[in-house]
Image 1 (spheres, one colour):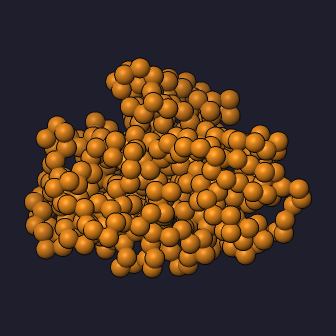
Image 2 (tube, rainbow, N blue to C red):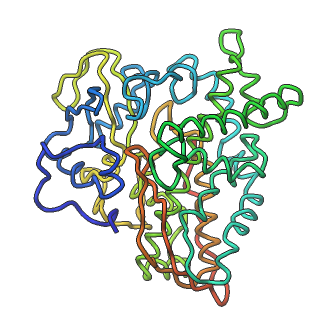
Length: 428
């Protein structure tokens, strides 16, 4: 399993490191490259295929500084390498806003998605997770990547305001939007796939926004229609863009953490037995999966002023790429970082970001993922990887597109699982 493999003892030659090429993420692991950079060049200059330059930052302390200090490092010019030259939605969606406008959307969003608010949905989420796992009852081999793709909409579909009948389509179209060149989600060429994904999602939300204007509810779409900044409401286009942003954030991350989590247990029967016996907290296991299989590889920021990171001067206006996945394997912070340890605690991972852009969807993920693990353990006696695992063609999302798992259904329910709620929540 590539996530369990420690970096090779010999460092990767710096001239061979390429953290832009999505194929290197699909066909292999970048952990050796990140390890080398942390050791030898913690701030490393790179150039994208179109000539755009950026600085790769790989150590935990430096990554934390970049994503937390919103005054020095701006989010308004794009947060992913796919839009290295600048994002047309900059300053218009919550993840691409700096204060003070950012606060006008973040505060009501946090109220909708806060831990307490999400806990009120636990019963419905659990029932839906049980239905999601129903195909496992007969045993056999199942593609867990495909099976778990709807998990985020199960958790937040109601909260956002998307009808259940559209959840499966939203899940797939968001993946087409974030990885349009991946065969699992492509619909023609990369450009054709992007156009189709944008059309389908914007058309859906355009209709839902029209409905909420006529009949407001208590969901996120209605909230966005009521948001004001400096006495003015969001424009219709900005409401639409923020709806798109929220489903992109949810559907491109949580299902892949879930799939990596299943793979980890499918490759270690001992860990699975301990989980089923109640010897491991499902919540600690989820936090470890978030660290060990960080769903968001990187986040971009632009320096607002001249700065120095790890003795490297960076000029105002230059782009900094904070590698979250590298920070979460930093030996200076995490003991034995290349081992999946579901009892790891404390676990100060950065999978949800930090600062004002800490992921608003974290409480939803921290609700749905332990429930998934609990319900899976109740239903499955043994699970084993049963074929080739395929990974997403993306330098942004650490995704799995195919995970065949052989499932042996449980003959009877095991002990009640440890599910101690030591976590909190809070936009990437």
